[in-house]
Amino acid sequence: MVQKKQFQNQIIYIKRDDLLSNDFSGNKARKFYYYLNHDFPKVKKIISYGSAQSNAMYSLSVLAKLKGWEFDYYVAHLASYLEENPEGNYRYALDNGMNLHVGQVNAMSSNEESVLYIEEGGREIYAEVGLKILAEEILEWKQEQGIEELNIFLPAGTGTTALYLQKHSIDKVFTTPCVGNSHYLKEQFLMLEKDEKIHPTIIIPSKKRHFGKLYRESYVIWLELQKQMGIEFDLLYDPHGWLTLLENPKLFDKPLLYIHQGGLIGNESMLKRYKRKYDENI
Image (cartoon, rainbow, N blue to C red; front, side):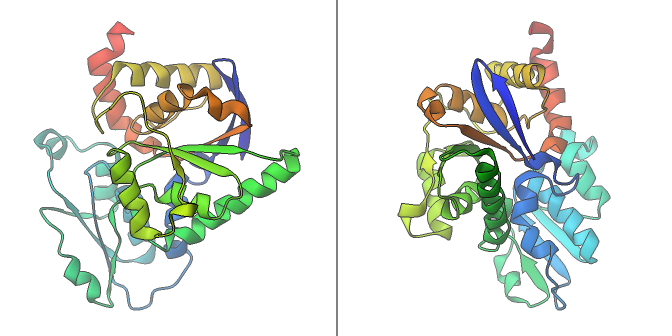
């Protein structure tokens, strides 16, 4: 589904990938499409790693539950508050049977045929399968609307979604780094695709925002987006993406399509943090 919206006097098309599924919404639906729709008769366990509130962690817990597999997930650190008060993606992943480990994951175990080892955030070559479908959906919609050229924008973690979307799109894909800087994002691209000619265009934000840190302007724009467009966005990536997008008006020289990548379960914990820090001051 694509919705036509207006925000700050700009016409914007929103690709509502957040509505694909409650369990596999947004880019996780695309990244894990291959695993969900193929049989792996020898696999008995998924191993992955990342943060304790990762959207990928939750979706992998659902995948493991559906397939009847074990799910071992590794985090470098688990906050005592979260351990004592499970919420958001962490809580629901535990409910799905996730085995959480604090420490370094042993990648050597991925050599076992019974183990499916998935990189942090779903940075996998198999993610290309689902993202090719996304590119095809966008092309079909664009042709139905009679739009000749688009600019496509989405914020990036590992950049996997933006990379494979650009690889299979005739339109230009723009993204901005949320987890690290532009050099980090470029390194992520190169892990999956050596041909830089088909890499997305990286937009460098005017202000460095540390991943997971709370910023007043991020909370304000998240509230405004919901108020003006009636759409709830993710609180971790989307505010940074929208702030960067809006400070680059040249991206609106062509019709602009913003990819809503889901991740709303994580808002449960993020919103509590923002309300404690900023709500009474907004």
